[in-house]
Structures are given as structure tokens and as C-alpha cells.
Image (cartoon, rainbow over all chains, first blue to last red; front, side):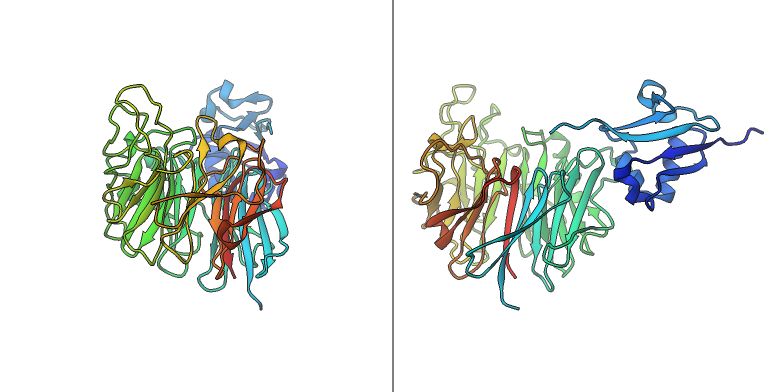
Length: 95
Length: 370
């Protein structure tokens, strides 16, 4: 039976207060959606900062699996492999 | 501790708090708190130990409600912010108003897309009020340029008046259990029907506890020259009701423009009401000469209050919650502009002074004596 992959979630500095100032989180998740659900269980304020109440990723937040934007892959259903890095990044800001 | 005047300013770049002694000679400014994040709603809650609340609506990371228990020296986040139930399908895009409720820690909150929330515990938990948020009209309201917002919550005992843009005025007479549109006499210039049942672009509603049943409304005016379907609709912008909002009549005659956003009632005189007329379509001071206009007879006649304000080349925009009054015996008026100026008008607006002239764009100004 395949093991659920352990992945790393990188947290941007402005959201670290939502997860005990951690720069990164590590846990088992087979997809981005599962990773976000786990974040929701462990760190609800971090989840609410990344996803709205419908479960959608906020418009100005980007999620990258390694170097690819999940919006260019399968969105929240993008699969994760052992050792993948899921990076949370805010979009570029104007004035 | 001697009384002081506290102002809570919501700006495009966070919340500021200004404090002055009763003389209001000088104001000390604190902030910004929640820096860089737009604040459309503030509340100075004077029930018991004063608390200052502010919405903090981050375009990146979502909604927060900030709370201060030390008169705006520090702010922390409440444990939760208003959010729709997941199955609803809507997501809160902005918090437009925070108002005190009945209980000592009860709060009401109006949001975008237009919906109403209540908190029983000072903002640590929130519940959607389904009677208006799931009203049969709710999915038929349309956003104006400011978004589809529930921006006004005015309570008179069991009666609750809501202002929705664009939804109109909704009235509950049973403490919020049910709501119905109450817009007879409230015009709309952007629909074929000049007086629809609902869907008006109400900008602000105000009343006074000494005159129950009387309400003043700044509606979306500026339709006197309208040549489209239904013809011109002059003077639909400033209105009064004397029957708890069931029917409304124009009180705009005498104003240089019936367009504007805020409407404020004198804290000690329900016959005295203030508006800030703006030109359409620019939404700026008429002729580049800012003036607050005052009626002392309930809207029967109007006169400008401009002493101390710029005489020319000043294109102020004052948003719906950008004007208020304090409650001292001789109250001062305050307004904040989208160009970052905060003005104070002593003696009910008789003489104006610029308190701060380089703040971020100001969305709301609330005042309290604490």
C-alpha cells in the first residue's frame, strides 16, 4: 500500500503569525486540497488567509508546487509527491 | 479620568485613532494599525469600558475584525470574522459597517456581498442573519460601483433599518426576524421604473432617538438631467420619512446637488441634519468649493457651512461613513476626504479646521466622548 507523501508547506513571512511563527510546516498529504484541509485543522487562521469560506483559494494568493502554479495544473486537486514543496505566496501588489 | 474626544478613522491604509481633550484644541494621532489594509468600518463602542473596533479587509488574505480595549493604543484580532456558511457559495469581500446590538457585547455587521451578521461576544464569533441575507430579493440585488454592500444598520428598538446599495431600504419590525423592502418614494435613476419596490442605491440612512419614526436618507441622486427611460428624476437624492421608513419624501430643495454620500443628524436636535453635496458624475465638491449643508428645520431649508474650508480648487469626495459628529454639548462635526484630509467643524460646523491633511484616503470617521 503506497504511503501518503510527506510534503513541506512554506509559509510567507506575513502569515507566519497564523501558525506559531513557523517558516514551514510538514505533514502527509496526497494533494493540495488535502494539504489545505490539514492546514485548516492545524492552523485555522492560516487556512482562512489562503482560502475563503467557499473553500476557493483567494484571488490574490498563489500556491506553487515546487515551481509550478497550481492554477496551471489541477488547482486544488494537484497531486503531491514525497518531498514536494508547496509554497504559499501573495500575488504582487500595487499601490 | 477627564473626558476626551476619540476619533476612529478607517482609511485605505489601515485604522488611525485621534484623541483630544474636551477642548479639542489639538488631536494626537495613533496608527496606522493593520497597516496597508483598507478599513471601511470602525466603531467606538461606549457600552461599558470603551472598545474600538475596525474592519480590516485584506485583498490578499481576507477579512479580519480588529479590536482595541485601550482606546486605540493597540489592536488585536477578534477570534473570528463574519463568513458565509460554506454551502452558501458566497464569500465576504468587505465589511462595511459595525454597530452595537442590544446586549453589552452584541455587535451587528453589514458586509459585501450584501448580508447581515451578528456577534454575541464582541466579535469572537459571528452568525449570519438569514432573514435578510437569504431574503428572496438577495440574489436579485446588483452591485453599484462600490460593490453590493449592506452599509447601514439603524436600530430603533425592535425596528431595524438596513441600507443596501443597490437593494434599497429594508425594514424589520420584529427585531430582525423578518425584513421587507420599504422604499415608497425612494427613487432610482438607473432603472426604467423610477420608483421600484427595491433595488435603489441608498447611500446612508440616519435618525435620532428623540424623534422615533423619523429618518433621513441620502439616496443616489443626480438624475435631474436624465433623458432616458422614465424621464428626469430631480430631487430623489435627499429624503425624509416620518413613518418609520414606510414612505419617503424629498427634502432636497435648496441644495446645490442632491447627490452625496453621508447624512448626519445633530446629536442633540433631530431637526438639524447635515449633508455634503457633490457634483455628478465626478462625486466631488460642487464647483471645487467644499461645503457641508445644514438644515435646521428637518430638511425644509438648507444653508452652507463653509467658513474655514477652501474657497476654490478643492475637489473633495466624502464617502458614506466619512462624516460624523461628536456628542459634546456644542458638538463638532468631522469629515474625512478621499484625499486624506480630516476636517473638524466646531459649533456644529460653523467654523472648520483641518486636523490632518496628509492621511491615506479616508473611508470612515467615527467619534465618541469617552
